[in-house]
Length: 143
Length: 143
DNA sequence: CCGCATCCTTCTTGATACTG
DNA sequence: CAGTATCAAGAAGGATGCGG
Image (cartoon, rainbow over all chains, first blue to last red; front, side, top):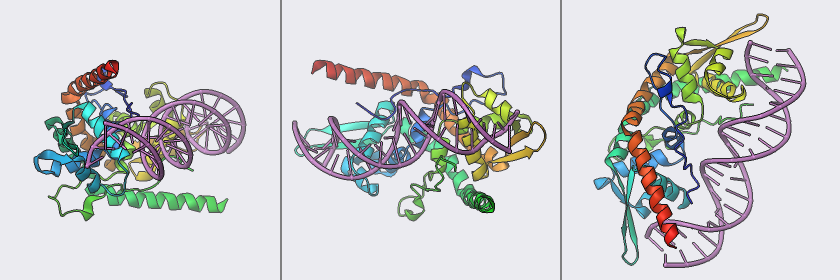
């Protein structure tokens, strides 16, 4: 029913490898989820909303140009993971609110460092990409 | 030439939205890369190697059951982003070493918090998934 | 030894249309 | 309003074989 990855899929669970210096790595499944197209944005929108809650329509509308399908799927998966709670009000017309759980807010905090890293390094990454692509082009020209 | 995402694609760049409380969110492109199947693992393997360097074959072999294609692509993209340096030694047979740059090591540090979050919450996430799936099944049984 | 080219399969995303 | 079903397109992942 939920097309998006339903497997728990702890991809590279390093708990078996403590022969190395202790430094386990982000087990994925969650990481993959965080890397998908809308998850982080949805979590963030909820986190800045009052009471960490938003009505569906409000949530959709804050995210630019997208049909309802993806945000719905995203939020379903977050609900399944326990990062978001769904509140259904059987009124007419029906109303639904999504609330970020404490656990969901926690993952956002964990993302802050990546955020800082990006702020500090994104321009260098982009520069590196430009240089790389140009060098590649140069090579192909010479052939 | 490099099939894996080559676009810079800063998906949800929030620098335009500081009307909200200041809390920019992980711009993606990088996040997407981190969420792909091998990137984090490759960075990690390199980071624990001596001199943050590994020869290709050594790197591949440390990663279980995979043909050379994916690790090669992963490392290429990391090189393009400036997170990894490629050292080529034109010997016979040729030898190649990959070295994690300072920037690359930095992103691993930024990942630590997610790592901690996972350690502390993964079991709860899994429990939530079980509960959700069971409830869903229950519903479909009643129809 | 290193890794690219090719082909194929699966998953993700997006567009559209239709129910309670 | 909220959300699902269906279909189509594209990207990512994997297997294999060739070439420097």
